[in-house]
Image 1 (cartoon, helix red, strand yellow):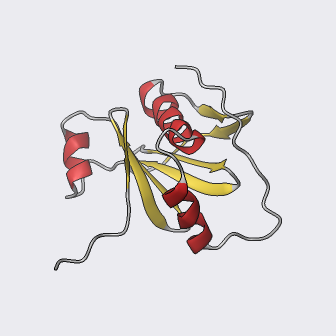
Image 2 (tube, helix red, strand yellow):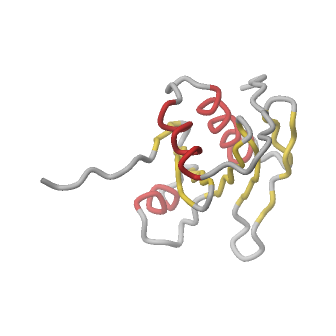
Length: 132
């Protein structure tokens, strides 16, 4: 899977989390963001590359020393995003999938989880609906 996506935009000022979330909420499901997240997941976890490419930029894949899990810091549309390989030794449903052999990567920005890719399928996190 080779994707050539140009997604880097330089923001003149720091971007607030509410602006980041507005971008993610209004982005189309087939957007460059979605393609970039799936591409990063594929390059890091399926192809096990040491350097991933997003558009014209490259980013190193670091491995956490304790569990050797992949971690990538990259940018899409000027927004800093971190991709983290799911730790299978936790109690979440994503960890359960990882223990069963699925390749799972969580994505976060401004300290909040925004998306997850599991076996090539992207899921968007959104605000939880209140119980009625």
